[in-house]
Image (cartoon, rainbow, N blue to C red; front, side, top):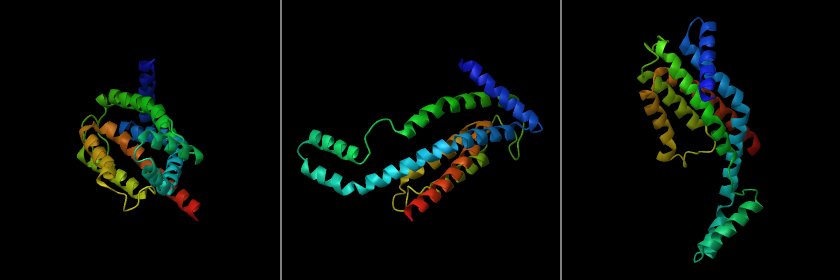
Length: 211
């Protein structure tokens, strides 16, 4: 079943390349845009829910501090009281929608990457990239800049909360694409572009809710 799934995606990429005047690189970008834009309503809603949950947790910080002080000698009682407080405010634990979305996306992303790896063996150049089967440092820089821009637009992170840990995904994106075949990097670039759009839309929604 997995092989059939990957082969189907590879055939779709080949067909896209045929429609796009033989450009496999452009076909990869178009596929990335189609997949991410199709999922945008779900991913945007999940991101907004995550932002709202974060705001609720920030509002509960004083009460959580009180519970910590009240149950300083009994961690188990503190954990129970914390769970009760979360339930009272609709923040009960469990597998969040973000995790569920990631579990759904993972097989799709793995299949697309496998299909691209099949296709780039015979792919040639695209834009400044001489061969899609080899890494490209400039493409890695483009992905890094897109990730950086999305980080700046993320309403969940103010200037005060942007720590080195939050900058880590930007560095990881750059380093991974730097070592990946450029064909895979192009898919990452297309996805990062839609992620940038998602952050811009999320920022707009957050501002409208704060008014």
